[in-house]
Image 1 (tube, rainbow, N blue to C red):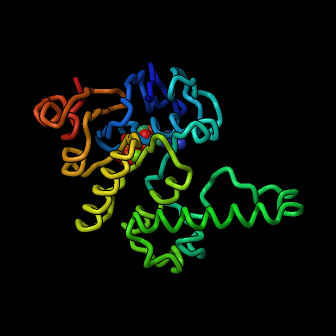
Image 2: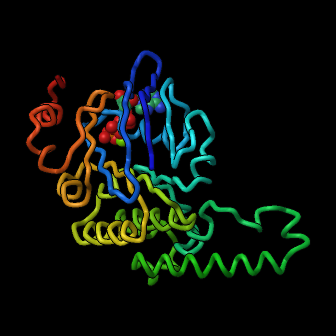
Length: 252
Ligand SMILES: Nc1ncnc2c1ncn2[C@@H]1O[C@H](COP(=O)(O)OP(=O)(O)OP(=O)(O)O)[C@@H](O)[C@H]1O
Ligand SMILES: [Mg+2]
């Protein structure tokens, strides 16, 4: 579903991502792990179109995405969440979902002027969809609360909800488990699994090894900007290069 070849990114003299190639199969939950500074988020940013790669190619569902602005990825059904969630704190949880980017009639000035009926119908549809998603995420009891009152874990769920509003084919999650209590973590894992069963493909950056080992198959390992290996949980666990990378050694 997603294919990247020889992807590289330089920041000044620093090569953050160094000739990385991998594929993410349709309907998989693929993990992306590696020590701090390995180049995981930079890889995500290029895939999602936040900035262009220095070199290399990105294909999503057969369409070439590298060098195209982020709405290309978004429009073809590829969405991302951020390592640090960015909700609109003063708005309610429900409004945050309704404000999530999508093809929305009401955004166009002339539509709001001449086609109030159509805009209202669209807004009702949005509201229904947002409610459904909040229910699915067990956040419906918080629909009317200001987003800034949510806990860290609830923010992660809210951000998942926001990307679900666009009806995506593939979701890039950057550290869904960071700063989350074990109960909520279990809930997020459950929701990801349920969404995956409905057909959504996931690529997940995560430092929580329990989460990765239980949820992700296959697992990609990056270190120092390079792809170190790819395999199932057991082969990753047993690979001496992975251990070395996480202990701060220079990968072979
Ligand atoms: N916008 C930027 N400008 C300059 N350097 C950057 C930028 N973004 C990332 N880097 C550098 O690129 C390297 C890779 O960073 P990246 O954020 O991709 O790592 P990561 O694997 O996501 O790490 P972490 O697990 O800590 O989130 C790091 O050395 C980082 O300092
Ligand atoms: Mg990161």
